[in-house]
Amino acid sequence: MTAEGRDRMAEGSPVILVLEDGRKFLVHLQPGRKFSTHKGTIAHDSLIGQGYGQVFKTSSGFDMVAVSPTWIDRMMKVQRRTNIMYPKDVAYLIAYLGIGPGDKVVELGAGSGAMTIALAHAIQPGGKIYAYDRREEHLQRAAANCERAGVPTSLVEFRLRGVGDAFPEKVSAVMCDIPEPWDEVSAARECLVGSGRFASATPTFNQAERLTSCLIGEKFAMVQTIEILVREILARPGRTRPGHRMVGHTQLLTTAVSTLQDGCT
Picture 1 (cartoon, rainbow, N blue to C red):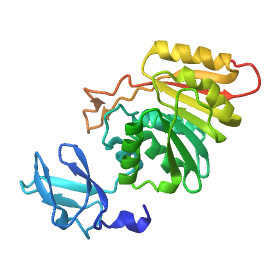
Picture 2 (cartoon, rainbow, N blue to C red):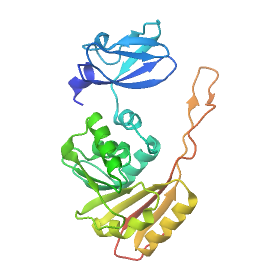
Picture 3 (tube, rainbow, N blue to C red):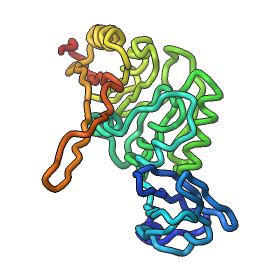
Picture 4 (cartoon, one colour):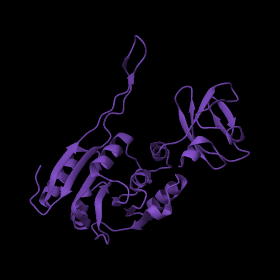
């Protein structure tokens, strides 16, 4: 989104509406429509033409802030039937993989397209994502969510693929979010250029252990598995304390570097 697009809301603009209780909703503005919440309704027409960052009143008199959505907002608000990764994990993996403008990336397990949205933000301009899945309905849902999030179609190619099939492209990074990533390590190694990087997210320790063993066997180096925990701190004058709730275990993140030498931990 351009600086001008971040300034004012227009017809069709995405907006995050934040209520007093902290609940957030992603809405695409359309003339004549209303958005309803447990704190009252608000007309789209009252937002169109107004600036992001303004505070509005719902029909019940509650404050609602209109905020320009980030790629994290778009990622977390996708329509889904599969689990998606949390921003804490996604941000780390993108940073570790060294993904930036112009890079070509293979994504294994398109799912609902949440990771695709995050990757698209990182590789533009000039990059390319090859998003694979073994189920056609997942590819269709991912493509629809990416379109709704404003991801240019030129950035992503959605492809159906069988387990272990060779990749026709050469890329600098492979991001894997599937139940059995060890079945794809050999194919991933073949499509990585130079010291290309591999990353995978798995929910269980057994999966991470098996994946690590396979990566070492396929001569990957710098094989590492980590877990990221985030705890909110309620910072208030004179009574700062940890929050009562936190996002604990989500995924184990395994990363590695492709090399012609023997793998090592």
